[in-house]
Amino acid sequence: MMDLHTPVCELLACEQPIVLAGMGGVARSELVAAVTEAGGFGFLGMVRERPEFITAQIMEVRARTSKPFGVNLVPAATKPALLDAELTACIEAKVHAVTLFWDLNPPIIERLRNAGVLVVCQVGSASEAVAAERAGADILIAQGWQAGGHVRGLTALQVLLADVVARVRLPVLAAGGIVDGAGLAAALALGAQGVVVGTGFLATSESFAHDYHKRRIVEARPDETLHTEIFHINWPANSAVRVLPNSVTRGEHGDPYTPERQIVGADGARNILLFSTDSPLRSMTGNLEAMAIYAGQGAAGIAAIVPAGERLREMAAQARAILDARGSATETVGQEPVEVNSTVCNAKEAGDIYMGFADRDELLNELTILLEAERAGARVGASLVSEAPDAEFKAMANLIQADEIKWARALFEALIELGAEPSKAVGDFYEKAMAVQDVQDRLAFTNRGQGWVVRKLQALLPRVRDDRLHAVLKSMLEAHVTNIASANTALEQRGRTVAVRPTST
Image (cartoon, rainbow, N blue to C red; front, side):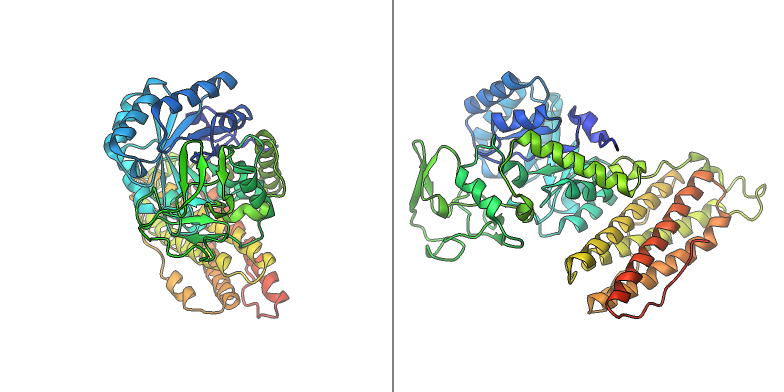
């Protein structure tokens, strides 16, 4: 079976690239310890918690496991004095890692790193990812808008992950709607080094979420979640969340921005307010139905409440089986996608000896053209996924998009090995393809684009001297031929004309 262990596992000191999201209130010591003991990495959700409570939770986790874990904090939702005390508690307890979410605060990153704490930043856009890398983050989490709870960006995970992976050098974890091994395998194939799971671990026996919340997750129907700003008290303005529908989202409680505050429940001595960001916890009483029932778009894939370790192990086993079935290429498990032989850098100097081979400048030009084309193909692929008319079409489009991202990254790395600054441009194929309104016609148009890539590679391959680069481009050619055949089958089944039937020879 394929080993899922990726480089980020070394940084986090865990066995599997599966990370528990630091869900406020929900991710407490019992759940963090269970995930960590099962081989993943857990984050305590400690937003706006007293430093004494944070310290106590850290001690409770350590009483249950000797493995490293982390703490999740949200500076933008925390008063400065409390935030300073939270950071002090984490540093004094020598936690392995701290996740920061919502806003970027370079001084906090510097303070944590100077104390020897690994810094993980969750971002909702590629520009935020670049800024976090520059500020000194060690690991990034790309959060797609499919995520449950607070959602920073407005970009689907597939598109966001492609942009982030292409623009940063840090390890990237994927978050947003991932609840099973298929989601893990897809994220790894798209270039992530692991996944962050929230909803999937909320619906476990160790989760501190109220049983009512867990049952709502299990009962969730496909496409039932809502992206809304209605739950806003205690967070910065204009902060979107993803929840399951309830009386609040149906508008049965009036104006959410009225200055009057209505109490709907209690957590010990603390009142829970209507329209607040509090979700139902084990310790809460009151009108649980009117609280924020956070859930990601993958909620419908959760059929039962099980122990966290069982869910983690099942995810890992499913992902291994899927990746084994697709082939055990190293680049598909989140490690460096291509290990290009550095001798390709000498192609120009050796050009006079190896007559007929492309020199460095020509290779740069050809690889750049292909990179921009693959980047365009990845974005078109995302549109095919999001507009898929049925599950079979969507599965086929997902594989095409994953391959486009995979080969874009391979070309990106090859250009770096040549000592070049890879282009950040997107090929004009993207605009041409998106001008085709019907999604099935767009697939046919995309197939013609893939046929162009095949012809380009067929012409280039005989002129590539370096064995490693040649092997990469040959694999890329064969993958495109396979994807064209898959798309042809889908088009023929729908009565569409097939105009592209290339071979890899």
